[in-house]
Image (tube, rainbow, N blue to C red):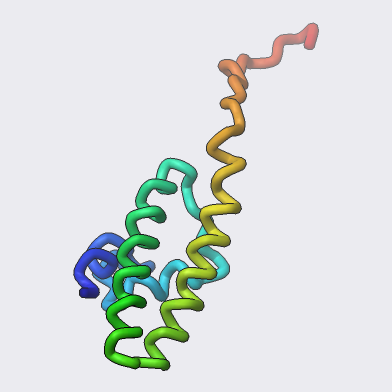
Length: 100
């Protein structure tokens, strides 16, 4: 069940994170708006894992998954306004002349 989340998210040392959802809990993580679709995939996977945990009555796992889902949804809400923001063209810088 962990396969989908574990091999995509990476830690700071560029190696696979055993528990990919732990990364989404990090307060330093800022989601690129281009990755909102990936957050949707992760949410779908976490919901399926939560349903499995409910069937098995794994209360600790359910609590952890709920916490991860809360962080994931918060990160997505933070990234969505950035996705709607238009790009700003700054132009090409030029060297200053004597008259500038």
